[in-house]
Image 1 (cartoon, helix red, strand yellow):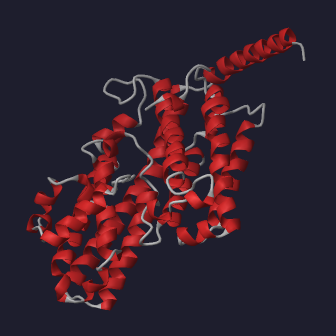
Image 2 (cartoon, helix red, strand yellow; image 1 turned 90 degrees about the vertical axis):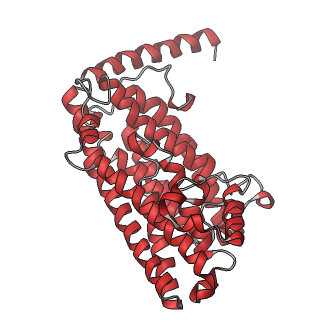
Length: 365
């Protein structure tokens, strides 16, 4: 094709897109956008934080029972509750807006990626020293984030030496895990309180452009929601999957996968992706598009469904999935398709909501 003709055609497409964007943007009323903010809080954030807090309480109770009466039954119960808590956290961790980003809460709940095994080394070192300050909640909260949350608890419950928890010989290990569990419960309570109905923060977050609201205007509110989605999907692809899945099988790193000891890697990934899809569906982002002239919404729904179904067809543990040629191919399919999904949300979908074509959520936080 002649390059001049191609450029003219391209400029024509841009002109059409600009007109379309202005038309779409004019329909995004303050009322409609605040409806999406409200739906995101009521249908995504609150239910998932309630679940996170509930599972944190259950793990803390199970840990107390294990430390008081160490036996195989109580150890199994604690391990089971840990897995449920990990999934609950996976359902909300990527909604990174507001209190979850403050006071190092993200890292305190889950220190990951731990590229140099910093967290693991700290936990192991303190186990050897039997550092009593780790068995008091306030003292633990002043320590490194690497010893405060799910990563530390997982090693204590599933790592080398964890089977000793069935006897009193592992009393310090149990108390350490119990204190970390209490810390996660405390954080879950803080997050739930910040977003609960009637809270000052949630009321301000669900408004756009009002005096005292979190967002200065409607566009800033939409930027926040799309940013949560795009950045979350990028972390999901590049760190959560890319951390263990490499181009060649011989370079795969199954022991770099999130929470691999408890076989929670895939269940947590599934919970992550369910939340991303939920932001679009139950959170109401799709509802902002009234005229899907190019079929973008249907295409996005299809891609979300394909990734979800493929992810659900992969069975844990992650090491076995990586060792199976077909399962590994599915993981690569997911990773590649995520690239297209991110591009379409960051590009076409953002344009349909009136964001400028020069803006990209991939440019930074």
